Amino acid sequence: MPLDKSPLDPADWDEFRSQAHRLLDACIDHLANVRMHPWQPVPEAARQHYALDTAEDGKPIDILIDELVSNVLPYSTGNIHPRFFGWVHGTGLASSLLADIVASTMNSNCGGRDHGAVYVEREVIDWCRRCFGFPEGSSGVLVTGTSQATVIALAAARTHALGPQSRRNGIQDMPKLTAYAAEGVHNAIVKACELIGIGAEALRRIPGGPGGAMHLDSLAEAVARDRREGYQPFCVVGTAGSVNLGEFDDLAALADFCAEHGLWFHVDGAFGAWSRLADPPWNALANGIDRADSLAFDFHKWMYVQYDCGAVLVRDETAHRAAFAARPAYLEGQDKGAGGGEPWFCDYGIDLSRGFRALKVWSALRAHGTQAFARAITRNCELAALMAARIEADPGLRLVRPVRLNVCCFNAAPADWDGEAQDALNATVAKNLQLRGEAVFSTTRIDGRTVLRAAIVNHRSSASDIEESVSLAAREADRLARS
Ligand SMILES: *Cc1c(COP(=O)(O)O)cnc(C)c1O
Image 1 (cartoon, protein in one colour):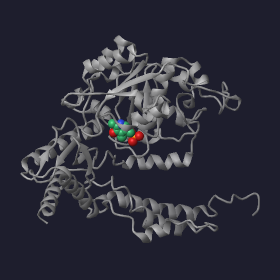
Image 2 (image 1 turned 180 degrees about the vertical axis):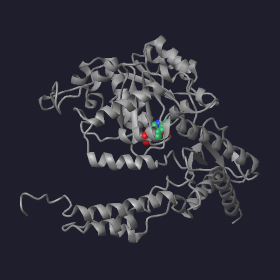
Image 3 (image 1 turned 90 degrees about the vertical axis):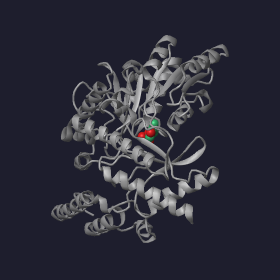
Image 4 (image 1 turned 180 degrees about the horizontal axis):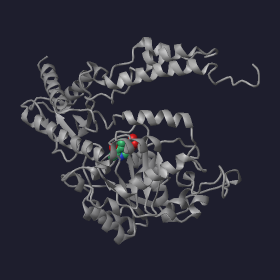
């Protein structure tokens, strides 16, 4: 190979262009007709096509594109379909498809330095800051998702509690830190406690009332007990939208409590933080979120933006930097040139090399405007209320808890079934509807029993999607119960 030719760039850009246009058309056709593409199992034949073997020789671009269109594109998670309500899976936006093309072309590394992508990311962070009422000067960074955002937030809280020398010396000779959260807290918080070295047991689960919110007196007792026993309470994690039921802690009360007791107040707002954009009454559920010391949230769930994209905001920029900033010689900044552009995002998180996630968020906000997101989120809450009403109207179904936001859990087993029979029936209903491509519900456990669960973060679902999916679940449950 001659040294003046790249072995990896297209040999013929005109051929690449026409093939790329063909691919773009296939992708847009897929999105425009997404109703025809529910989740389906990946057939063995397609999986065989994925085998790389030695991948010794490349294939012509038209073959690659045929493979992408036939063997990869059809087998999505299913979450782009209007009848997908499982787990908490965002749908993705056509506007972000365009952004991904540009981001991929630019191939920016957003760890730092002076280039367009970091200015775009700063604007996205600042929009979030205003959206959630954080003060000017707060810091933030886009990350893979709320799981990583939580690790960053709790690491900042830990370093704040133990002092910067804990970065050098570790925490083994330090006072034992303890954190507090509601019983329904997401496992991402548990993982974060493991990763910051305090251990899962150091996360105290505080019992809550019927709406899931931590009891403040139980919280106060737990903190006092830990202090008496020589622990160092450092952080309270409030939940804005619990994963199982979309329930909220009383964030304003927790903010007061943390201020009074000198604790870091973190909020897990993975999807529920976006209730701030909804109409009343939903927009009041997260009152007090603006008083958090740190907030973790996702764009890939309820802001409909493509995976993966989450963010962390930290009120005290100095505390945020103190936990992460480090500049070895090969990363020294410059006052001008490509090596300028302070502050660098690598000083606010784990990743040094990071992609241009911000562009898909920025493009979504540019294309649709905040008001359109407010309407879409409000509409999801209305659809969840509609789902709850349909369930209550169906003699074969029972709503497990009142719907607070956008999560609806229900039991499709006959009223006189309980225990494992109920568990098995609900699990089979979920599985069979998925396998037939009719609708995707997931399951969870409430009060120890398996129930069907819908988390509605889907901007494509209509009222009839909700009604028909509920009817399909009822019909399937009835069929199974009889057989
Ligand atoms: C999804 C979720 C998380 C984890 O977020 P990822 O983006 O999946 O990492 C944390 N908390 C809650 C309440 C969630 O719903």
